[in-house]
Amino acid sequence: MNVPDTVLAQPLRFQRPVQPMARARDASAGDTSASDAPWAVAAVAELFALPFAELLHRAQTVHRQHFDPTEVELATLLSVKTGGCPEDCGYCPQSAHHPTGVAATKMMTPEAVREAVLGAKAAGATRFCMGAAWRAPKDRDIEAVAELVRVVKDEGLEACATLGMLEQRHAQALQQAGLDYYNHNLDTSPDFYGDVITTRDYQDRLDTLQHVRQVGVKVCSGGIVGMGESRLQRAGLIAQLANLQPHPESVPINDLVKVPGTPLANQPDLDPIEFVRTIAVARITMPTARVRLSAGRRQMSDETQALCFAAGANSIFYGDKLLVTGNPDVDADRELLTRLGMKAVGLQGHAV
Ligand code: SF4
Image 1 (cartoon, rainbow, N blue to C red):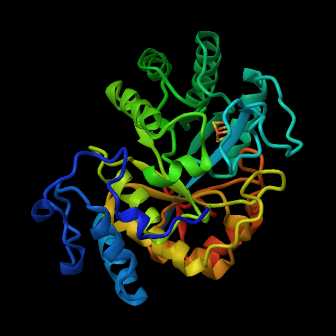
Image 2 (cartoon, rainbow, N blue to C red):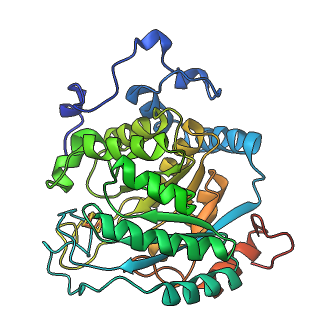
């Protein structure tokens, strides 16, 4: 599944129009300014290749220009409709294509979601994200999710949803219900995408992000690393995200969770240092984004997570479970954040 870097020297299929290099960022010159100049993949790759201490210093410098480095946002993710998805994402246990034993469920009721929201709020979460395993929601699905969005907003949390591809009119309906964020990950670089997913293409992803932007809902979009992509392809993912105009407000970076039964179940582990580099590069190229440590935290050591925070991660998924895979439990998270002297954003005095 690995694609040699020499192959990647070819033009990327779905990349934004190629910009003259003279206008692109010069990573080697330490250009971390907030200009609108695009990030060339080569410039992002140069950041990846920096000596680790230099990379972390640059990422910390950018981070401190925009955020309190001791703050972390706590987001909670709930699967409101699990399994049976017709898409074939190679990493996903909810795909009907993979024998993972995840059963398809019906949509959760507003009452059940309210209970989960109250629990998340009591545990200190400020954002509540709801996921449904659809290729794209139908009209009746949007009505049901809009109801759930209103439940989240009633309880005073930010509402986020991840429902698959979204038409603009559906994005509009969710915006009117109060949706703050829509999550739709680019997953990986355009040239590696077809190795992981065959039932939709990269442009579909970009179109959904555009529909979300057009109605004024904030964009949450990131990707998954450790799927067998090369470093240059990781740079390709980050360049795609950073060149969105504007870049996403939230950027979840996931470390592949290898679920038995999925095509990626036997991928070798990604070097944790490379994961930290990915976080640092995301921070430098998307200075004002919440960079979120997402799936894969359970397999990460405390030390790796600490390095991720030092590299500019400032949001975590919080709670016992992600959509269907495990997450570090709440007590362990609280203990780690306390050991690191970090505090939950938006919750003054809240003991994490
Ligand atoms: S990642 Fe989303 S779209 Fe892909 S198979 Fe899983 S639930 Fe379906």
